Image 1 (cartoon, rainbow, N blue to C red):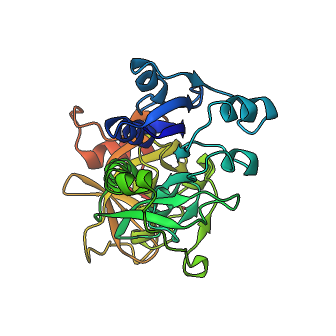
Image 2: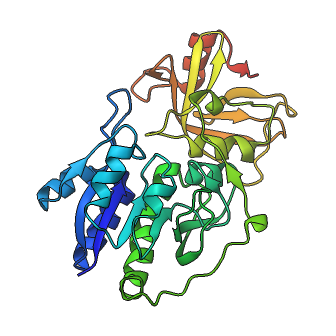
Length: 316
């Protein structure tokens, strides 16, 4: 039976840890994170899964601290796995397992190396992404690839939709290659890093909508940061407008000649963007409250006029 130490968090961590257990891997310790009370915890708990299986769990602030490395070294792991663990692992940890340290990344490497790859792929209008199991080096997401699984990104998929697909892709990739990996005969191929890209993390402010951009770009931003992420937003005369869901009707032009405007047509809310194309806004909040409530007695146009004093609001 192969022995492993697992660094894991989030849904990918839960599903990939489950795969290891299903294949009879002796997981000697799980290293995970303490949930941040300031963060919306919409995902499953690695710590709870480990507890159900009687696996020791630690949550060090610094996994690379000398005492942590010594504690894990004493377990004599043959493998180290990282499944959506959020901290970088340095050389002393990566050198512990003789059969290698392996990371599951949420993109088709070498594309979208780095942070929040699902969100970045949607922002750039990609129609495909996936999950990649690769050897861990100190340089992030740069090691040899042993398994990949692609999934489609549909035009109106949100980051939540795609993340669920990537979670399944990670499970499939790991489940398929694990027998060969444990047997020491998995075929690895080097990455051509020049053919890929690296992206950093994102902040809430990066969700600000610039309505002067083409409608396709605005739509991609909205769906890339839709709940449970912070959401795309813009500021208006009546406060912050938060756009939670949109549709991009193909070829539908607005009536304002490319001047960004919020308006109602056939009792539906639209935004014209800088290229003259429109987005239908399906879920919108103003100052934290739903805009254009379907429960109101007024029409959508009359509601918009009552809130902003105009039936067509210029956007910036």
